[in-house]
Image (tube, rainbow, N blue to C red; front, side):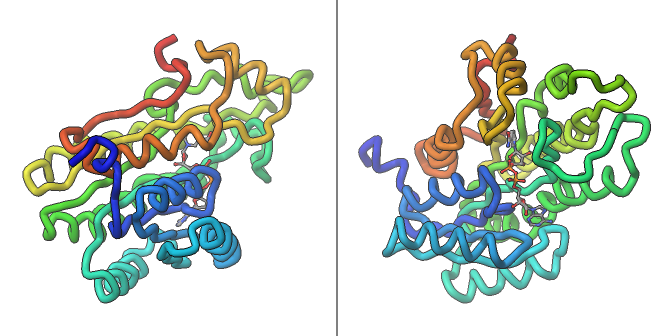
Length: 277
Ligand SMILES: NC(=O)c1ccc[n+]([C@@H]2O[C@H](COP(=O)([O-])OP(=O)(O)OC[C@H]3O[C@@H](n4cnc5c(N)ncnc54)[C@H](O)[C@@H]3O)[C@@H](O)[C@H]2O)c1
């Protein structure tokens, strides 16, 4: 097989959680570019339908599956698994992408002055439920099918905050007293570090079953943040800029395909050098 051919994932069924979000849409693009069949899971019908429309126009002959799904609901995941197996007979990949991702720099509603000491327990528990329990359940339900098939790939999406701690200075608002400043919540750090534990555990557990499990750490995605925030975060990044969403699909396709056949348990960090500075 030629080197470029190794990047093809023709007709492979790849489940993507949180697929209607900012990066989830780019994972979908990666699967479609490789000739695979993306299975988009997200909470609401409307954004999923919009994704399906957008990608069906761009890739007219592609098969695209969408399911309204809460990944913390095992029964719901089992129903999707059964439908996929009935239609295609196999499930080849899983991208555990969904997580609560509070945009402290702006854009998230109702964050209030959320500091470590007053982070509500229900927010902590919900963050764990989506970011860790959801990923765990998806691995149980979809990953186990891959174990039985003796073939499959799982990518867990972490973050630069799975490697380093948030520098809260970049979220500080001018003229706001310290106790009223909102910080990136501890639950985000714990989820993003935790998902790497899931990767390492399963990478060894399934190493001889043909299922590879790796972590991708995206970082600092440019998404219309205000100028002051962009300046502050860019100063922490050796490359001096935030990332673009289109800088992820090629790496995702590499990680999904046989181009990365000897890689398991690895952490791939796309952060412009932030975590080494
Ligand atoms: N945006 C960034 O700068 C950045 C940086 C590093 C890492 N990440 C990671 O990338 C991943 C995606 O981030 P994003 O910025 O695209 O987030 P996003 O908020 O745009 O998308 C997340 C998606 O997950 C869905 N979701 C939430 N709970 C769910 C549930 N229970 N079941 C199914 N779907 C659910 C949401 O509806 C949403 O569409 C996250 O894991 C995040 O931690 C993002």
